[in-house]
Image (tube, rainbow, N blue to C red; front, side, top):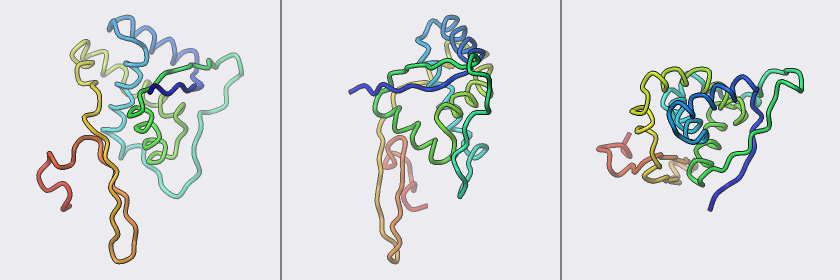
Length: 151
């Protein structure tokens, strides 16, 4: 089941994304998700807690483009998790990912896109420790990694 959503993206960010997709001969959405996944790998840099959600800075109305994107369910959950961890709108996460990681992805060329693959699994585990409910989110199979669950 595909999930259709929209993000607000500045024209210059959209153009950079479009040029990269053209150069890499990949759909724009794949390039977008590749840089978003790169942001997740570096999420500590963007994490915020106990604050309100941040949005993109105000720009004149004509600077924006409403970009409709179709995500797989796992990609949508990934974006929702990032929104929660970074306390940013998905549109801001996309803008930060393009600004921060698109050049690195382009330098890797086609090999950088090979790292973008479907998630092998998405696991949410609920535990209760001394009356405290704990939620564990795993991108990938936690049972394939030694001692992951004991940490």
